[in-house]
Length: 396
Image (cartoon, rainbow, N blue to C red; front, side):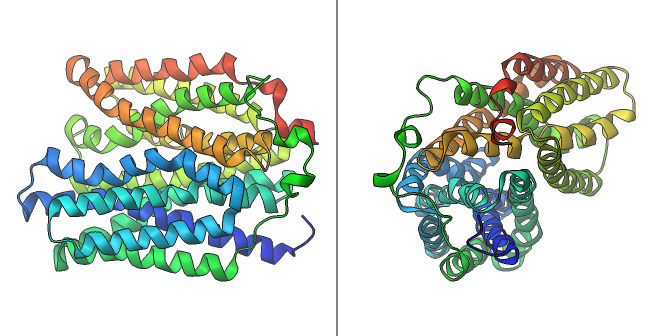
């Protein structure tokens, strides 16, 4: 930890954040092309939605594989290479002359963009001491909402003014910048050579312990209300609450920003109390309560439900960075890439199931029932959180 100065450490975090943020512009930004694909190119919403989902499909395919690569060759190379390949795929999609070719490039770009997840997280764990990792990882975890926000700010306007091809060049440009910054500014955190490592450090952390498995399962359960809130807030405000598209969009933007702040606050909280997993237990309880109250207020058509939706938007995302940090600390420098890849893969798979499943439930039983059912998942997670195996508590 003492091989670089404080300013250098935080600058590395900033570059790692940018690389992850720009990857998220590519992964999530294609969704903002749906109106143009539908209106100007004549695609129905199902086909346009499929196009926008291609980066996410690609990402799921390679998260664990990229984690294994990071474990072998280090973070700087993976961030630089992955960002460069993502940029190349974006430029390829922009230059493609058929929709099928565009989809292929978007799939390949998603496969490349997955590289940033484990690599940037390992940068944080490797360069920051235990008492600062929660805060640092919380900042790093803002990459997703900030990436979504940046994509929403730029991509629709470019598509409307200049077409889909020009809009697709934007994530290409920012990912190319990330690749250059990674080469110029990043330094791999120190770790022992495999030949010199203690056998315990090389051992598979999934064998002989259920701690990582339990954290993965808890994270899957807690991501259900997060996905529900993120997916259906906009349509709920417009169809159920009667809000305009612009007003509902403003609330969603505010929710994203508050969610980013919540991740940072949760990380700082974990540093201060010396525990990663005890805060997750409190967050799970808060998620259950907020979703249950949301269900009750929805039954009575109360305006308070909008405020509770904002609260749920913050609470349900606050555990992400804590679980990510705990997994990296438990898995160690030779396994954390694969463990983080498994964490992301399981959560992304769950987020692929939640929208159609809860969409069907909402269609048949209404939002109140869906919110109430969603409150059950954090309650199931509570007894599964392995608080006694907290990595930060053991380190301190």
